[in-house]
Amino acid sequence: MNQQFAMPAAAVPVAQPTPCLGCGAPMVVEETTALHSNPKLRCGYCRREEDLPQDAAERHRHLRLRLMQVQRARESLEAPLKTYQMLKSSFVMGAIFAGLYGAWQLSTLISNIDATERLKAAGMQTEYAQSVIFAALGPAIAFGMLFGWVGMSRVFKGAVAPLLRARPPHNPGLAARCRSCGADLPAVKAPQVTCRFCSAINLLDDSLTRDASSLLEGEIAHYNAQARGANPDGKAYHAPTRAFYVWGGASAALILVGLSAVLFMIT
Ligand SMILES: [Zn+2]
Ligand SMILES: [Zn+2]
Image 1 (tube, rainbow, N blue to C red):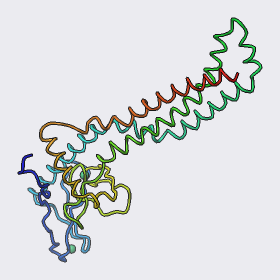
Image 2: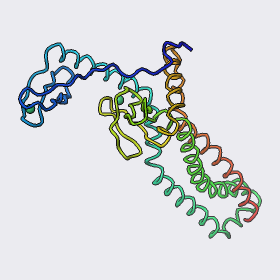
Image 3: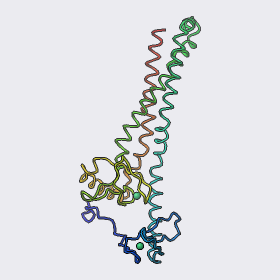
């Protein structure tokens, strides 16, 4: 490993103190949304307002553009997670629907057991098989969705959540940092916080303080890999959705076969 980059350096200090010339209080740079507008310096006490010096305004625009590029790149890398979010948010309704549908199909088969009995007559084998498999299909889909969701959640926790975790503070007592742009994150008691500079969602957990040193080493390894042109995280964002289909499809197929076999035996 290149020792020159072995320690994560603190960000370049960009903000010098800006005391107000009217009252001495620290002035703040007001937020601007438009990329090409110049932000103003504002005092929260005496309401004094002034333009940022031209060169500082230019630098501010330059840095905002850079943040925007970082944000775009991150959003396109993480785009597959949108499917995960969609599956997650529609899962409960879908599973309830599939469960009710499956229960209805099964109960129809069982309550019409006489009709099913008649289908067992010679020449009706196909119809009989169809009615049994059709009855097993609903429960298979319902449980397939359930197992798919379990698989998806496990893969998200194992492979994706660590990538969305905030960067640990460089030293105990300092702020955790944004995983994407490196800005200091506000200290909040919440499972996640959104970066106000680049809109990245950062997950917060105990490991940020508990495992800070190994996370800092992981950060160095990550940047070294990126510097070599490797993108080790790219595939991880697809993994939860893939797990949903693989776990869901496999378990639905198994349940369909198993349940059909049981129904053939008891009808
Ligand atoms: Zn002032
Ligand atoms: Zn950020």
